[in-house]
Image (cartoon, rainbow, N blue to C red; front, side, top):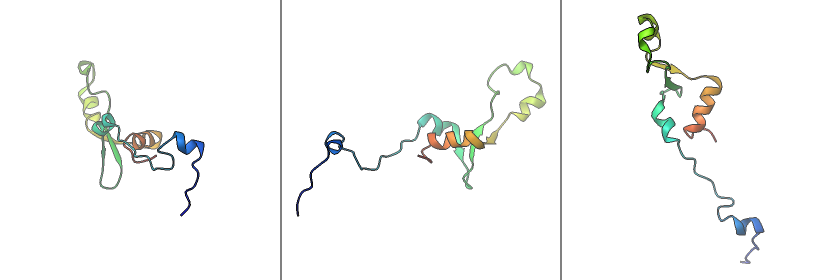
Length: 84
């Protein structure tokens, strides 16, 4: 079997043509959850400080997780390695 000549690009880049592994952003992995149906959940914002000026009702509303949608969901998917 005849050996084919390598192109300049192949000589320079040893990983040329190989599939690259996508790494998960570890900071994002700690902040998001993926549900069984594939939705991405994130903790609601504004619950970490300055709570004395927020009403009880407002603090209750911002407790828990919310479903990400739109551009935020796409960004989270990229960070989690779900989308190239």
